Image 1 (cartoon, rainbow, N blue to C red):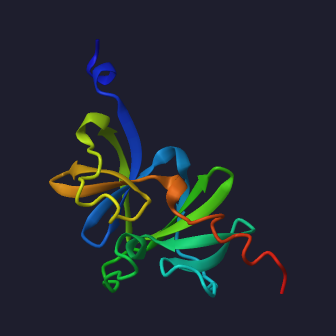
Image 2: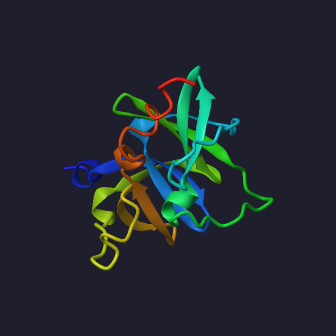
Amino acid sequence: MTDSEAKPCSSVLAVRIDSRIVGVPVPHVVESMRPLPVDPLAGAPEFVLGLAVIRGSATPVVDLAALLTDGVAAPSRSTDKPRFVLLRVGGRSVALKVQEVLAIRELEREGLESLPPLWQGQHPPAVAALGVLDHELFLVLEAARLLPGDGGQTERSGGA
């Protein structure tokens, strides 16, 4: 048995959020792009910035830093290189606003841990697992849980 057979890997796109590295499962990643204009949505959770027109579709934009910190994201630094990462999840699209896109990484699944009991129920539901990557805390997202309900797309579809 080879090493790759003994240690199943998972591909993630590593992005930086404040002092954290977050892994977004590669099968859901469509592309990375410069941020686009966002129209705010009244009544949306604090981490939903609003809607952006991406590839001709109204797409919810989630501020990943705000999602991971209960809406208390650190102010942007002048060295930040903000990006949108467009994801496709179950037929829906969502754009994540991140501070920096780092690289695609292969994670050994046995190196990831389920969430510690003290953090269960207290973490954002989009966090599936955690680990350490390059001596830094590494959070792995569960892309299907990024938006509550229908992702906010039908809330504005009722007309003007």
